[in-house]
Image (cartoon, rainbow, N blue to C red; front, top):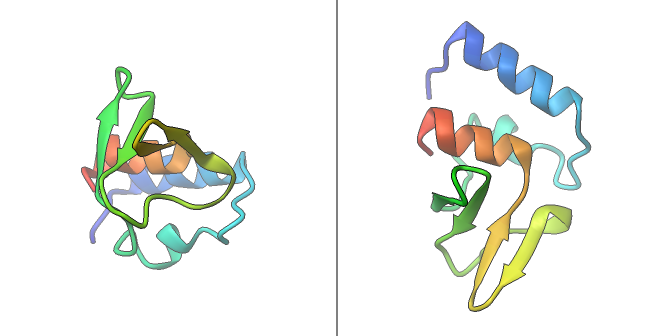
Amino acid sequence: MEITKEQERQIDRIAGDMECPNGFVCRISKFEDLCKTRLIANGQLVECLEENNGRGKFKLPFGDSSLCKCHLRIYIAKNLHR
């Protein structure tokens, strides 16, 4: 997946401000190893749309679904549409 230099700067900034318990596997895979999501709550959260719905400290169970509060994943969903 191609990303712009500005997107790369934003990704670097976001990743630099957080700790990822999964070792930034999304970034290492060039954003190919991602579950399908839907933006909710005015783009503040993403809802995972797959059974393997999220991992780690950013997972937020919500009824029958799971939400993700990872700032990098939210950025990816909003700006890279992935």
